Image (cartoon, rainbow, N blue to C red; front, side):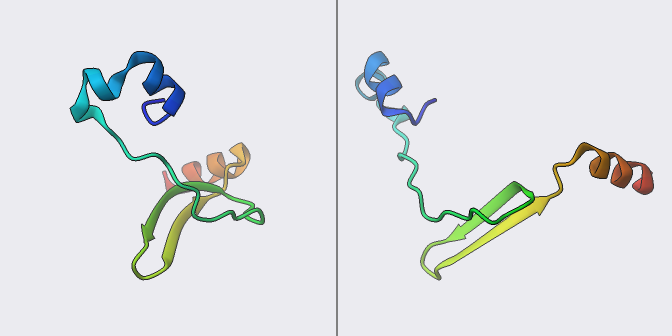
Length: 70
């Protein structure tokens, strides 16, 4: 919510707490064909690379993996 411009304007965060200024999120890609859930990502803008750590979000698969690892 801190990055939402309407929220920031309503509370006047930029004028009241100038050190809380944050960068507005920018959509850099859309990946509609990913069947797994995204866990983390790293964007190397200067190299034009996006790394995404994914995992299966199905609860039975995750439970099976957990029990196998125990």
